[in-house]
Length: 179
Image (cartoon, one colour):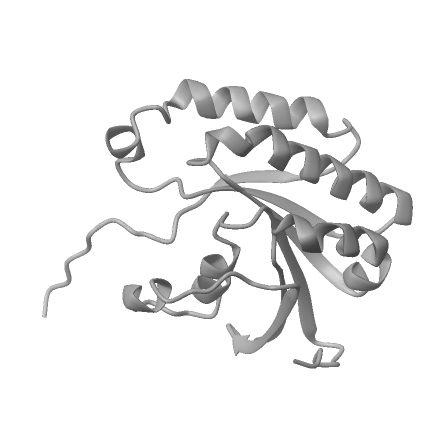
C-alpha cells in the first residue's frame, strides 16, 4: 500500500510484539464492529499501511508486525518509518505474562530511538486484551500483576519522556437500547 500524502492526514504508528492485538486495534479504529471480522486476522508480515477517513479526518495507520524477524529492520529504518508520524502507540498483551520482559525490552529500544532521532509525537502505551472479566477468565492476571507491569514501564521510561498508559480491549460491555 502507498502512504497517502496530505497535510490533513494523521499518521499513527502502532508497534508491539506479535499477537499483541495491534491489527485488532486498527480494525476498531477503522470502525469495524462485527466480531467475526476479528477471527480471521492473519499475522502482519512487515508492516501494513491502513488509510481511512473518520471523524472528519484522514488517518494513515502503520501497523508493524511484531515478529522478531521484522523488528531489527524496523530499528535499522526507524527514522524513515516514523517520519511524519503524530502518534506512536505501543501495545503490550497483558495476557501474555511470559513475554512481558521481551515486550519491555522492545519498548525500551523504541523509546531510546525516539529520543535519539528527536521525534516529537504523542506516545501512548496500550495495556491490551484487558477484557471484561479478565480476572475471572485468566485468574493469573490480577490487578497486582498489572500494577507491577506499570511500575516496570514507569522505571523504564525516562522522566522527561511524555506518555500515557491506557487499559484497552476490543470487547465492550453488553449494551441494550430502547427501540
